[in-house]
Each structure stands twice: as C-alpha cells, then as structure tokens.
Image 1 (cartoon, rainbow over the protein chains, first blue to last red):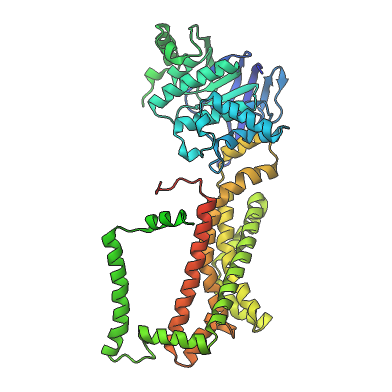
Image 2: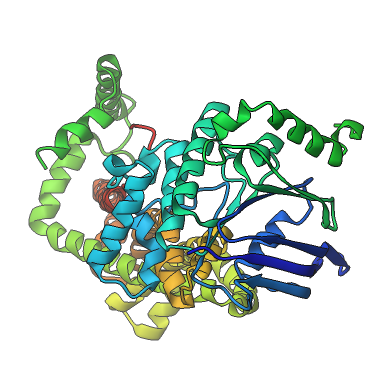
Amino acid sequence: MTSSLDLKDITKVFPDRKTGHEITAVTGMSFSVKPGELVAVVGPSGCGKSTILNMVSGLYGPSQGEVLINGEPVRSTRSDVGFMLQKDLLLPWRNIVSNVEFGLEEKKLTRKERRDRALSEIDRVRLSEFAFHYPHQLSGGMRQRAALARTLAIDPEIVLLDEPFSALDAQTKVVLQKSFSATIAETGVTCLLITHDLQEAVIMSDRVVVLSGRPGTVVDEFPIDLPHRDDPMARSMEPGTRDYVKRLFDTLHLEDQAA
Amino acid sequence: MSRLLPTMLSRWNPAGPELGIMVAVGVAVIAAWEFLPPLFDVPKYIIPTFSDCLSEFFRMLQYEELGKNFMSTLVTSVVGFLLGSAMGAVFGYLLGLSKLWERVLSPYILALQIAPKVAFAPLFIMWFGYNALPKLLVTILIVFFPILVNVLQSMKTVDRDLINLARVYNMSRFTIFRKIEFPSSMPSLFAGLRIGATLAVIGVTVGELVGGNTGLGFLITYGEGQANTAMVFNAIGLLTVIGIVMYFAVAGVEKRVLHYLEREDH
C-alpha cells in the first residue's frame, strides 16, 4: 500500500505544434517521496507541474531520466497510481457509487466486492447518504470528496493530487483540506500534492519541493517540521507555519514580481 | 403517467393571464382567418376559410383516403428518421474514433453537408422509379448529416482528462469509447436527433411532392392541380402535426436519457 516515488534527473521536451520548436517543460529534475510521505510541489505557472503528474501516472515518459515507483521504472499507465485534479472528473451520467466503482471495473472483482469496496470508501469520505445521488445534486466540496473516494477505491500505491482544492471557495477549501488530510493519514498512502497555494503546501505536507519557472527544476526542498499533518487547521495555528510560508514566498521571489 | 402529467403541466403552465392571452391570440387568428377573407372578397381558391378547411378535411377523410395518406407519410418519416439517424450516428462515431479518416473525409462531408439534399429527390426517382424508395432515401439523406456532424463534433470535444483518467485505470480503447466517449456524446446526439426529427418531415414531403402517388406531399400537388386550396392547407397542417409529434417524442426520450443533466427548472 505504501510505496516510494523517485524522480531521477528528469528532462521532458515537447515539440511545439505551432512553431515547430521544442519546448523544455522540465529539466534535470530530481526529488523523491518516501513511503507514506506527503510531499507538496509548489512553483510558478509553467513549471511543469502537470508534466510531473502525467509522467508519474505513466501517460507519457520523460525524454531523459527515470521515474521509479518502489524502485521500478514507470513504463506505461499502471493501475496502482491514483490521480485527482482540480476538476472532479465524475461522470455525470453515473451516480456517486458507480462513479467510485469506475476505477475498480478493470480489476477482477465480483459485482458485490466492487459495490462493497465503493460503499466503504464513500463511507470514509462521509458521503454515504449521497451514494445514490448524481454528481449534479452535490456541492463542489462533496464532489471532490467523491473524487477522493474514487481515487482511494483502487487501493493506490501513490496518490497524485493536482490542485484538488483550487476550484473551491475559501471556506469549503479549508474544510476539505482538513477532511483530505485526515483521510490520507488514515490510509497512510504515499502522496504527491501539486499546488500553487503556499499555505496549503505548508499545512498539508511532510516536505515541500519548490520548482523554478519553465523549464522547471528543483530550486529548494525542505521538510516541514511541524505537528498535525493530519489536521491542517490545527497546523495553521502553529507559530512555525508563518516562517515556512515566508521561506516559500522568498524562494519564489514573489516580492520582486509585478502582477 | 399520472405522476408525470402534473409536472408536465406545471412546467408548461404559463401564469394564468399569460395562458389566457395565448388562447385569445389563437382564437383571434382563427376568427380573422374565418371572417376577413369573405369580407374583402378574397376567393376560396386563394384563401379558404377555417370552416372551409374543416369541411374539406372531413371530405378528404371520406373520399381522398386521408388516413392512408397520412399514415404513409408518418411511417416514411419515422422509418427514414430512424435509419438516417442510426447511420449518421454510426458514421459519426467511426469517424470520431479515427483521426486520420476524419481528416481525409472532412472536405467531402462538408461538401455533402452543404449540398441541398432535397435536390436529390428527382435523381432518386430517375434511379428507383415512382415508389416509396426515393422519398425514404431523401429522408435518410437529410437526417444523416446533422446527426453525423453533431456526433463527430462531440467525439472531438470529450474531456481529455476523463480519457486520461480511464487510461490510468488501464481501460482499453473500446472500453474508453463505451464508458466515456459514447455517454459524453449523448447531449449532442440528442441535439442532432431533434433537428433530424423536423428535417425528416421536409425530406418526405419533398419526395412526395416530386414524384409520388401517396402521402400528404402528394395531396398537396393533387390539391394544387384541382385548385383545391383547402386541401393544400390541410395537408400542410397535418405535416406540421407529424413534425411536432416526432420532435416531442425525441425530446421526451431525451429527457429520460439525460435525466442526470442539471436543468434550470430544478
């Protein structure tokens, strides 16, 4: 259930269809995530955050370097990686329980096993009473919780979270960060959280990796030495939190940037 | 049904005064139609009055096999619509699955889509003679393209992230089609079907106008030949009825299939 993730000296070059030039999205990028660890990746837009996500999930490979899960190179999509985006990606024509079953349908399970597994995940994110509702009947926050249930239902080795809270209003976001942190801590799954919210990176993770602008590469990396990883609200009250956010702020040179 | 009817009424229900005005407009138009032409000495072969049309309607029922002609047009419309939309949908999905074929064939599809399909009617009559086949073919042809284009368009705009999600779950190409692309295309397919339902009636009518001996379109040319304007009016009215029935049948199925979409009237 808990696996390590290593990115070793990754470079990814894309051909640009319009100009014919090549675009380097990330270059010489290395960092790793230990089993059960939650690492937050922050960086300016265009630093190749989505590229990392796609390479780890095996949608495409790096141009150079290697992505290793548990020491094994990722060569194609694999069913032990779960990913979640800003969009909930729930299928509007399916109710919540069959949305959660979606990822399980390629696994060798009986209908009953699948249903039980889905319902227990739905219970974990406290959506039991909405199991047979359709996505449009749920609020944005509830839909993201359903998406988390779908992500965790496949019992992933690694969960990739790509700005899962950025489309939500401020209050929903705080509540959802808390509920996600608790759920992730409970499962003990290895987690990569891609975000542009510096506060979120500090209050939710064990470690933060800071990327530069395009082409993205690691410019800083430090552990968050604060209690309550499973409770971001409590952690945000810790006096040390502000210093870490400040450090990120400085590393990204936000003060020098014009809007 | 007993549960459905009240909600249908409540959805359709314009507020009291609105409904009253709606009915009043209808009554006023019919009254004008009935009384103004005689008042201005407009002859019956130009504008037959409402009551002329009604009595002609009953005469047609008795002497012109109106029922048989109506059914002929209705059946051809429905069959042509079903065949045309099935073929349009199949081609749309196949082209949607193959980027190469879509690119290769798109200029020809565009050309055929622009070509006025009803103009093919005389050609089909030359090829297949004066029977039910030409009008059926015109109907299929006219229904085919809007559905093909809608389905193809929807296949091209399926959310890439959903497909990536399915790929990460190790789903095969066909499974992705079955579980993501096909259901995603439903709203566009139904938009196409609604257009197709009204176009089908046009296809049949033109087919019957050009060369037929049955159907409402035939009654229009027949009435024209006899300067029986009331007959033409009635046939046009009944063709409209067929179009409306088909449109609402499609809309009804759509409402059931796409029940999961957010609607304003929630």
